[in-house]
Image (cartoon, rainbow, N blue to C red; front, top):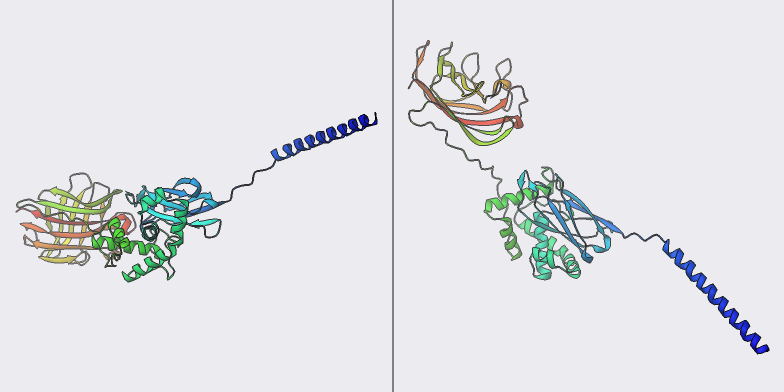
Amino acid sequence: MNKVLKLLARTLILTGAASLAACSGNNDSDNSGSTTPVPVPSSTVSGVAAIGAAISNGSVALRCGDGINQTVTSGSDGTWTASVPTDSLPCAVKVSGGTVSGVENSAIFYSIARSNTGVASTSNLTPMTDLALASAVNSAMGSTLDVWYTDATDAQLQQVIDGLAAAVAGLRTALADAGYTLPSESFDPFMDAITAGEETSLYDQLLDAYKQALSNAERSYEAARGDYIAGGDLPAVGPVQPPIIDVPDTTLAVGESGVRFATTGTVLGLAEKANVRTWSGNGDVTVGFTVATLVDARLPGPAINSYVNFRDIPDATGTYDCGYGFGEDKANIEIGFAASNGYNTLGTRGSDGTFTPGFRCSITLTKVGVNDGVTYSGTLEGNFSAQLYKSGQAVNTRDSISVTGHFRLGTE
């Protein structure tokens, strides 16, 4: 009997212990369900996409470790920012599309984002990052940038990072040997500050110089990059060439009277590039009050308020600067484009007859008629060139146009 009681008591004790253990397990489960998840550390990756001028609205794609992918858009100044898990760095980066100075961008530039502080990384996208990265990728993998961006493993991304310092140093040497001025002795194209399109930005100046060198050498960027990776030199720095503007023939045909002229700049808010205008007709040539001066040689334009008017010009062949005519009134040109007061020189001349600094105008007379002091007969012919301004606006390049042309007025 005692054995039975002892066995029963032991059974009850074990059962109670099991029940307590079960209750304890349920409580632990409830507590674990209310625990706040630990946030994943992230890093900010940012930079500037530029080819000298900013790449605006470009598609900036990041391909990071652990299969993380992200795409952002560059701003009007080329800046862009993204946030990625810190543990996913480094990231391969490329920019494509968008516009450069209002023109569609067809270039693709590559870069790589490193973690330099643990919370932020700078990754510019420029021809300089592209050149340095192409060298590092070629050395590490024997691959091109497009293949590397698509196929590189996490280990290969890190392998390129490991060789990046040598690639940057090699680029600095190649740039110096080709005559470029570096922003600094320790120039790092991936991380150095750049303000796209800003003349005082040393990085921007370097990009502009490289772009000009490619133009001088008549080489595409892709071809020059291929030469560099193959061990060739970078295009050497050369003199800055002015932009090429096609100058159309403004000469009048034999027997034709009138004015033919080309305008370059902004006319009535619309940009022009050597657009030609032709106004036909004999026009009028009037003798001035001062000996050897023609007070008015005028051809009305085809629309209201449009005209070409040469005022107070010498009655002799030769080249003359406007503002240095004969008599009290100075030489002047007026040209109107169907707009009230037109684009002309009137707004640049003071009450004393002198012109605002920056005004440019010249007339070349190649043929003159007969002036008897009262009337004029025959043909007045020549060429003209002027910087004209919209009446009532400040004298500045933004509100001016360049005009070159040929005229033949009179009876022959």
